[in-house]
Length: 199
Length: 299
Image 1: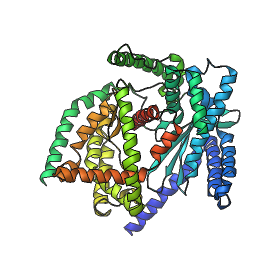
Image 2: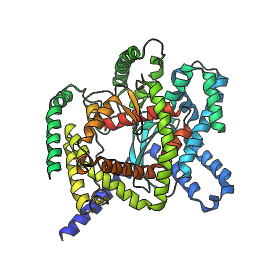
Image 3: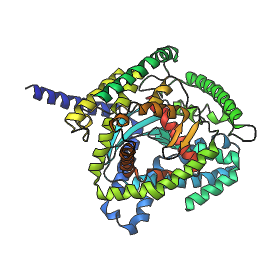
Image 4: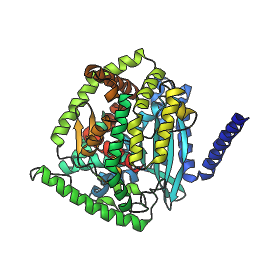
């Protein structure tokens, strides 16, 4: 009897968290969920598993990611104070290269996907800014918390930063890029970026 | 039994030692900013004030580190522009210019390369070979066993930070996992009772008292750390039963080494992907370490 009560208590707790989760989910979470599901679909598609389909698969993922990543905003935040000193041409080149590097980093992570669990832990919105928190549980029983930081543009939300386990990707690149620009020059940074992307 | 009482005595000593700064730190901490949960949602004005405050702190700390470095070496300058006050109401924004001081960069870079080679030439091949022989679920169990054993570190640091609920969770986890979980190889406390391990250590405790990382250190073999976290690490070894359980130094090192290899076998690929995505892997790792520790302390 006591055990039954205990079990029903657990079921109730579980249900209430599920319901709460859904009630909390807003637009930012929706768009992250949509893209995540799309990417998981692409990665686990048996038709795209063969090695000769690799290019096609990458292209599909890229398209899905492009829809919600704000490359310009990411670039602006990464260059920070160095952004204003750049010409429009330099900015264009930078966004192109940096976007490619981010994409590759992202593809690398996503391609290793093998049925990891993705949990949506809620979101917080303040005006035009929002955070979507998700938790990835790997096969090795490690939990990775991922925060998508998003900004509203019109009616849609776009990602401008991803934090993995408390480490912001944009902050990390900002520190690296700043160190390179300060020690040598923006030109050197572009050279290094180009080499990295072509690697 | 003798070992256990020694641990207990040390725990009590530590607690009394830290009791005074703990309570005073609680009083002096600014209210509101780091409340649990929604700490990244703070109003614009408060944020801006914090930015200004942080900036002035940052510049003083840089000045201090410059005096350590000496005049010949250039440090990355800080610019208030970098904070971009218009860029959004999230705490993340102000942390974007927070760098860890690195006065010993030359030495650190040397050991970074040393550790890099150590990983690729020894740890990785050993970890990969071991991983081929021992199936993954078993390696996860071994990791659980060692982490269960290190319970006193987490439990005592929960207390030192005034996290009594966390302390209770750690004790419960230990009891459940040591019995139902068969000496800690399983983790039923998490899987059945949803009790997450409280990842606390002395470095975080010192950080929660308001002590900054001081400067970055790359230790050979042990990897990235800071002055604060090194002190913490040294203190934590007194709380680790492994220190007392195996008195023969050779065996002790062998067991620790095994723990390390086992952990490595479960983490192969992490360092490679950091290296692959970075333009300057040293700076990337330094920043990742700094951000990671800061987020841990905030929790």
